[in-house]
Image 1 (tube, rainbow, N blue to C red):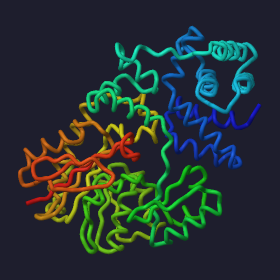
Image 2: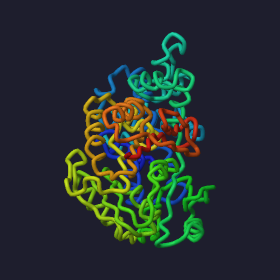
Image 3: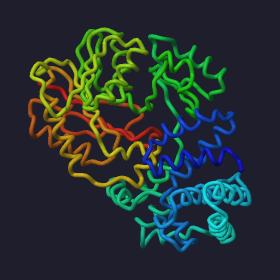
Image 4: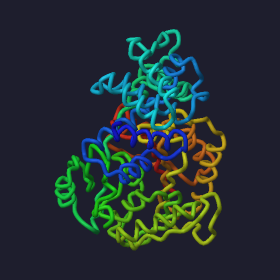
Length: 443
């Protein structure tokens, strides 16, 4: 049996059955087995492909096995998912190889009878020619998009309401793409040219992007967090579009900034870099373990102007009222803008009024920290208006001491409102993750 399939299976099982984060599970699995570069790429492709297409794979398995996916043993259903992905979506893995390797994997995990079941299901799928029959696009658009792009019907309805059918399909298609990885270079430790040379020598496909920021783009991050450069704090991961709220904040050297929902700390690092290591940044998060991790990362990166504190962003700290030059609220959200990186969102998402309430409570509380003339920036990584534009419009009506400021960002979609602008980025339009930012100034 090919060991790459076993490694891929183990990672897929962790993600789909134990709710592990796909990037963490993948890095952990690769680190424990230490495969060569070509095997790393194959494993990564199998893992991301199988997880990204989960809903559609389950539909095909149920059709050809005549069993509910939940009635199939957990180990075996993930063997089937991996096998069906290779049969239906992989362009370079032969059908006989996908079937044989899956059968051998089933034998290792169970017994010959179960392996026979796996063999029968996969052979029937292989012989069918067209294992996936899509609903009619015109009469059943939601079902069509859901099954074709392996994304829940609830999300599809939301996306169609935001973009319309044509753009919704482009969004759903983009959700299946493997995005490039962007890393921001920590100029306290190195420079972008030196890091590029070092990573290239280690086999990473990296390039400097046309940006004012010290940023590198990589085709894959596999093995990146095992490098000495990571241990030295030479870089941190952050999507190209994630600088949007930081640019809106415009942190100045010597200023006092509050990052009220700071974890995992990438934006906090960039703010520190923009301030040339001067001034003071207070990084807050409600989870103590995330604070501990951020403190270690900031210390490793030499970011000494950042102070971390456990703090619920809904609870007022009287000592900070009207003290900050800038407040960043990168609030908890549905995450529909980062589906490419976290494909489990495609079937785990549920509309949650409590999330909307949480965003409002954080915004209503943390706005008190902004001094007169100071800046309040609200951002999310979702594309839903109820978490973005609608949230800010309500806030401005209830807090007339704030006004929306004009703000431009490339790439980005600018929407005028009152005297200012909202800014969105979308994966199917701009090639970045989906972000929203609103910049407000206290009068």
